[in-house]
Length: 252
Ligand SMILES: [Zn+2]
Image (cartoon, rainbow, N blue to C red; front, side):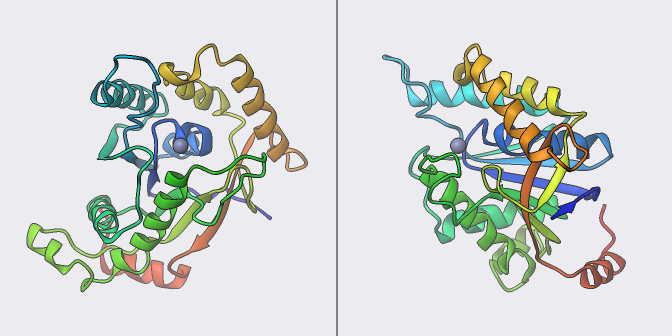
């Protein structure tokens, strides 16, 4: 277990659906932003099957949910939101998606990428994990290593001025499982406020808010944290390599 006070310079959250970030890592994002981290969101789908109302089109749903996503991002201080608009519920981990993610990683140059758990078929809460979450988690991890950091992967991107970038660490959101706990005691209200911005999804939010307060309190218990989010953290580059890379290529 580690209680991490580490704050990356730049972080990118790559998720399947609008509201995945708010459930999984918005408290951490808010904390990092407050401490000077620049954060970008990549939404692989715009959640276009997420409103089951007669007569509404998927394009209309996507527009509503993208607006909600931008509002939620703004609450935690994130302006940079990229929508890839893959079809909701049908995300495939293929080379086309990997290349799209490599492009975004190389453009934004994150030190940390936060994403879903590729290995999680069933959640610790006894639910089936959405297939899009697994597909996006796998695609993101595959994009991070080794593709994004190797100039000969998708080398055609260089013609657009997009060059290899090595990510330092990946933070896996695993539905409350993990060994690294981020203290979100000061940002739990922002996390809930951001979730509330997904008006089409959360309704009155009474039960949801209770559940999230309990879950984050449980994760913080015994660690001098009133509320915490948990991650499984993996190194992509060692601290030594990262420091060397920074010296060679100062980040803008
Ligand atoms: Zn989702």
